[in-house]
Length: 130
Image (tube, one colour):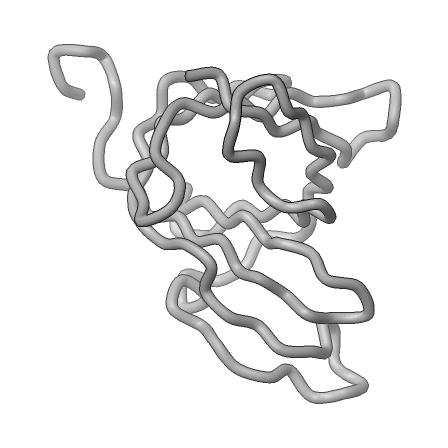
């Protein structure tokens, strides 16, 4: 941990995923896997915009640089391309709230994922905080 109390050096990727419906997949390296959320309306770039993020199954680390087409009939069928990639710093991570600082090509700044329990177990809100 650095002097600021922030953990360093975890990778993230955001995939633009043209499946049945266009959505974005946010994937965060943690515990040897990629914690993953589907974000139907895309990652908000400005403060004040909240987006639904649906937590999905963890993915293996080799999804970090995956681009290509997932064949029809397979889970997630469609075209996947990297929209952004970089590292993130963890500010806090608990069951109901995750605070991060993204250091990517597109995403730069502080974000939060907050569990939206009224909407369901896997529902979160993603928004920029700084």
